[in-house]
Length: 206
Image (cartoon, rainbow, N blue to C red; front, side, top):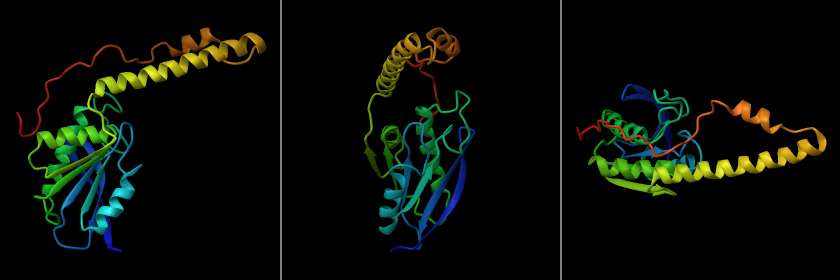
């Protein structure tokens, strides 16, 4: 089994403080793989530990990051967990961070991501010529359509729950009264309409 060491890292992405962990095999100048996690997650969950163990044994360094607003990284001014072009920019700045390190080969960089992270690495690889390889698992192509579908499923489940609550309240007097539930929900943010398109500076494309 390949010996390796892990190091907590931090860098900046459009002013946001991004944290992560880099695993380094005990060899000189290894190539690097950067991991992009799924929506609302953080760096060291789901597939990341498995992929890390496989790649370390093959001589790759492995960098996981918490995208802004996720895990221990600084939140975006737009919200606690607003993933989209911000995540792409986080990966692009992670590439710059990796290239600043003397203990890895900054000319051999690959990206791996799952779910939302899969979509993130596809776009990052398309925008940044420094990327030599991209692997995307369980990715999607249309983020707005995917998120709208997720909210539709959530709304359907909540509607079913409200119906059950009404029946239970009518029969037993227990459960959440629909009027009280609606009052409690006032002010809750909802997804309405297509996202606003913003002008952003992509490093190397401004």
